[in-house]
Length: 93
Image 1 (cartoon, rainbow, N blue to C red):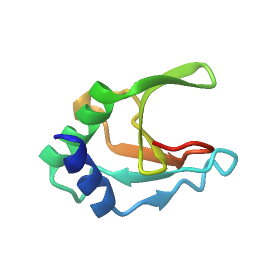
Image 2: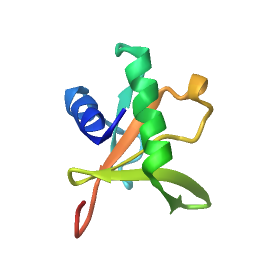
Image 3: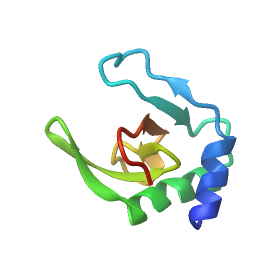
Image 4: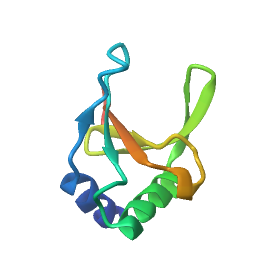
């Protein structure tokens, strides 16, 4: 998957507000209900093109696009069930 394919994928997804973390507002999209190959390619794209960012005591690989930061929980590909996103503050990529 290239950048354009990633943008097409994220724009085609339904994003759900994470109600359990209101102090850290973000959304997520689920692996369920999407072409598995496309989901895995999006996760790989984030992990291969992203940067390390710290959230509390853990580091995650994040990728910024179109005013959002995207990340997964760092699980192995076969166990990764969602992609998160949060609005970027300040300057956006």
